[in-house]
Length: 66
Image (cartoon, rainbow, N blue to C red; front, side):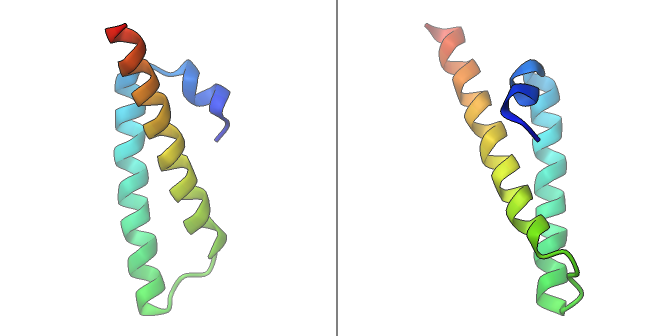
């Protein structure tokens, strides 16, 4: 997911996307703990996507208050 794609979405869309990614992150952690994780790189992708969305949400919140 690119930062430009994230910035184009509304706050509600970002919050929904964030919730989905957090669920996926939980499932990936569970798979890793049970030894069923096949795509280990996906853990890193999800973690970075979560951080990217949180950063954009914070930027939108700060710019709305300014």
